[in-house]
Length: 156
Length: 283
Image (cartoon, rainbow over all chains, first blue to last red; front, side, top):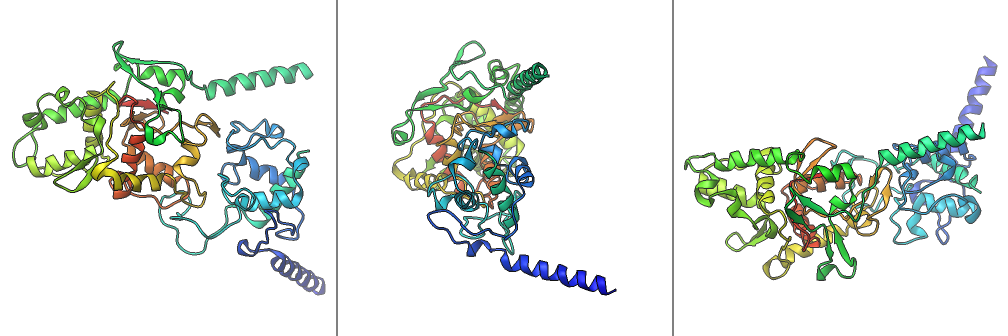
């Protein structure tokens, strides 16, 4: 009984901490397009990040970017730059900024802003073609952004 | 082991190649052995800042898809045009008249499709060909207007396109049509939806590039109505616009809306000089 209580308290404290440290899209601080602070305080998981990068219903990054490391995923696009060596060319903070909102660094970038919830023109309800109603969710969650950044850092 | 991997990679590569067989961008289109279709020409004046030349979507499709448009017997879109010809000759509405009663054979309409959308002085608006057909139905035939991009409307549009094949797109963008054209241009360059994508992002800045398995074209509409292998039917340009805007995670405009009429005029004008080739075949 006592043990259960302690576990529960620890769990709640953990959740509270995670919540407190999750930075909402509107509160992200960009410095020259880079974001120094983790969006969640929880280290990104590169394996999860690779999944987000290659899955159509998630980040679908390969729709526009080619990544040799993910050669087993079919049909990489050629709209954006090759991501081989991204972790070498960019710092973690820069990658976080680019994934969260690339337009902060590259004003006219075609890249969608994955961690942004306002300022859209005729925002729709996902892919239904109908108007969006209610609270806007970013394209990726804070932790998914961290996971993608962690994966990109492995591309040396 | 290494060798095996090599073979597997080769097989994978050739499979990928087959699946997204890219087009021979230098191929020329001659339909039925005698209609020469211009699929590449100098960009119209108003587009000279963006493009040197304009390319029909036909050039971006696979050899197999391209060849389906080279003979009417292989072109499934011609079934729609044939149905359009039946509708053309059939009386409808309270006046008991058919299209043919006033306009004669469909071939007499050659060149009409090439100049639409077009300013209508009496109505004081730019009209698409479908709007003009519906005006005839309501006011001359006493018939019910068709839904925008409904199958009958698209079939008759396909018929009218087919008799203009090989003629250059030549929509007017100045004079009374200019403000509608400007509105269409504004829409073309607006980044819609949660993905914040404009028509130009894909079709002006990235044509020729792959986006996942799709080979991006210039988004020309000289081939509309177009038979898409994807949905196995003839599609109107507005329905295609709708699909594109939906895919930016945006609230779309409706087929037949003033916004899409303006966009049709603007996009058509980007293809001024290309041949009418509808009903075309695309993926």
